[in-house]
Structures are given as structure tokens and as C-alpha cells.
Length: 116
Image 1 (tube, one colour):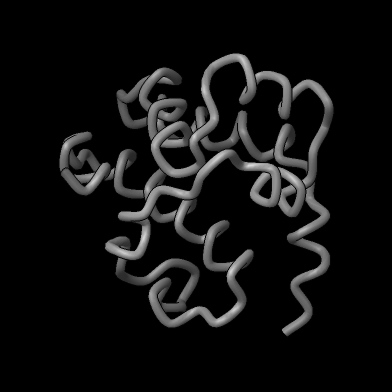
Image 2 (cartoon, rainbow, N blue to C red; image 1 turned 120 degrees about the vertical axis):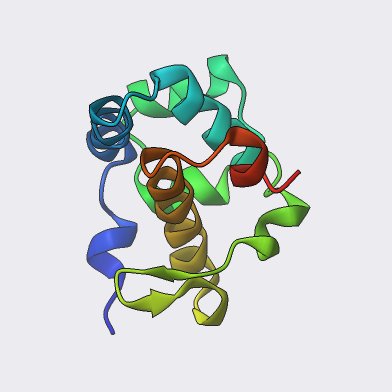
């Protein structure tokens, strides 16, 4: 599968969709941000910087301070694929984020989403 299109997609264009999906289900932007902080190691300032500079997904994840060591505990289906079986590391990281946002929108508690 050619993932180039997804890798080059602007994170700043997808971020509002994550927020919209969460808010539609009664969750908050702060919860979306907390999930992103947990997964990537970004903080509020660095996350906003990545959104403002128009980073694509590839640079967003390549520049992430630290992918959470518990990210490998994220399992399940997203877009018809098991996230734990995705071989391409960048695609897996993107799908990890998608999966966490889905869990938030489905009403899971933050403790469960953040694998505590």
C-alpha cells in the first residue's frame, strides 16, 4: 500500500477533525490534547507550534520528543487493520493516534485510553 499521501497530509488539517469528533461525543479539546501529549511527548507549546507550522504527519511523528513506551499496548481494529500488526512504524503511529481518538469518542475513561 502506498502510504505517501497519508504521511504528507498536514497534521494541522486533521487536528480539528480529531477535536470535532471528540466534541461531538461530549469530550473536550483538552482531552484530545492530553492524548496527543501522552502518545508523542509534545507539550502545549510544541503541539501548537507543529499545528501552526503546518507539519505533515511524517514530520509530526519524526519530531515527536518521545513516543510513549506504553504505545505498544494499543490494540484493536482501526480502518479495518489491527494496529498492533501494522508493519510500517509511521503508519502504526498514525493509527495509534486514530485509535486513541476513537476510544475517546466512544466514551472510554482517560485512564483506560492512556493505558494506566
